[in-house]
Amino acid sequence: MGRTIGYILIGAAVVVLIVGALIMFGAEGRSFGASMLGFGMIVIPLVLILGGFGVYMVYAGQREAEQMAHVKQQRELLSIIQTRGQANISDVVIEMNSTQDEVKHMIHDLVGKGLYSGYINWNDGILYSEQASQLRELTACRNCGGQLELAGKGVVTCPYCGTEYFL
Image (tube, rainbow, N blue to C red; front, top):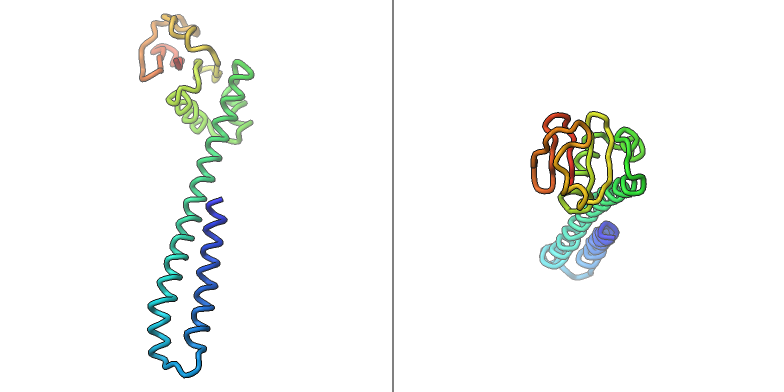
C-alpha cells in the first residue's frame, strides 16, 4: 500500500513539474526572470516535497513488504512444527525454500516472542513441539540423559548433545 502511494506521489511530482513549467514559461508578457523566480519559488519546492515524500513511501513500503514476508515465513514454520508435532529440519528448510541458519534464526525469534515451545535435537536435525509446562519439569535431556543447563531466557541446553529446549 505504501509503495503504491509513493509511486502516485512521484507521478504527481512529475505532473506538477511539467504543468508548472508550462504555466510559468508559457505565459505571454512575463519576463524570463519572473518565470524563473515563480518556477523556483512555487513549482520546485512543491515537486521536491511530493517527490521526496513519494520516495520515502516507496522505501517504507518495500521495508513493510519484506517484514510481512518474514512474518509469513515464521507463521509457516510455526504451523509446520505445531501441526506435525515434530519435523525434520532438512525437510523444513526444503519446504520453506530457506537455509538451516535462517530456520534456526526464525526459531530463536519465535522463542523470544513466546510463540514456540519445544525442543530441537541439532545432531539428529529434528524439531519437536511440546507444551512449555511439560518442559519446565525436565531435569535431564530426553536425547542423551545429560544434566540440562540454562542457556538464556527461555532456553535450556544439554551441554553433552547440544539439544536445545525452548520454554
